[in-house]
Length: 468
Image (tube, rainbow, N blue to C red; front, top):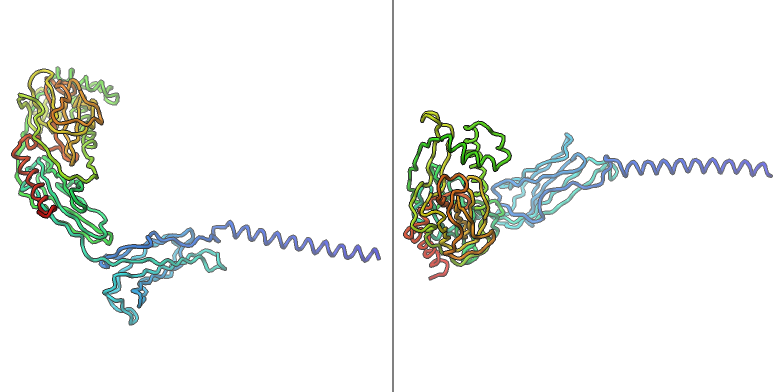
């Protein structure tokens, strides 16, 4: 009896060991399947929203990606009654990404034609990967996208604008942009982009534009695009007035280089090791100058998104009883010892004015102070935002009497003239910028110019907007 019990016990132990081995094999296989990249379980993804616009003219481009190589895709378009396959492919090469280009089927496919009047379509995207998951069938994506057909371009209407613009000068335009699904718009002038500010009512905008003084040719256009990719470009009709700017030669004397130039070199550690006189001159007059101007441009690019009901500006007169000592737009060549030995060059992008020593500098218009610090060659330089992208700066001051963030009223004394920065004598460097572009200060110091190019433009636009 005991013998038979021992034999049965052995068989039970052998069977249990076998089952344990089988169980461990299943667990190992399961762990392999669960962790192996070849058995990944994520369906392919597409980089497109659930609702899109389409103009039907331009192809839709849809990118499909997956952790595993893609196996196939199929794309159909339905108008609610008929469905047409517009793209499909069995991918033989291993690729984890595919950009599918979808064109609207203008002709019948297999005898089926989409309704050309349909404005609401369905895009059915199917994609399968080469994963070994799902019994080697892979992961399958099915995504349905709602498509709104829109083939109308945005409406752009110019309400009023300045009659002309001078090279180096400014102009104003008030316009309307209208579209049920507007994506973006901007004003391009002289190769630069200008932001418009909302004006009076939704869909209406105003912007100042500028013609850079160092650009020979000039055009100005309003660009608008909707969500479907429909675009419209409208030219701003401006009469172009050419203007020539002075060229001057200046002797770079050792006294000037060893004095002002060397003083500025000492304020900037990265230039402090320069010993050669001419290298010092170029470092300050060219490299430092450009860095200072880039800072100014950055400060002067902001335009508010807040809707304004009006914008008034008076002529600027920053320095009482002042005499002009240097013009805007001068192209200056510096020579050393002999006139044929030109060693540096620069542009003068402001108007230099002088009166008495440490004279009061006044802001003729209200605004917000955006800078109250030293700025290299410009020295102590208060800078003010007057709205609509118009900025004024006041260089070489001895003292700044306002602080960044101050809201100042018209007539505020903001500084005293001086000779800080790259200035040999006490004077004011007065600059005006439109969205980061230096423009002729003379225009904004002329009451008639402001009346003709700003006040009248707003008045004409207001009649249309207000319906008077």
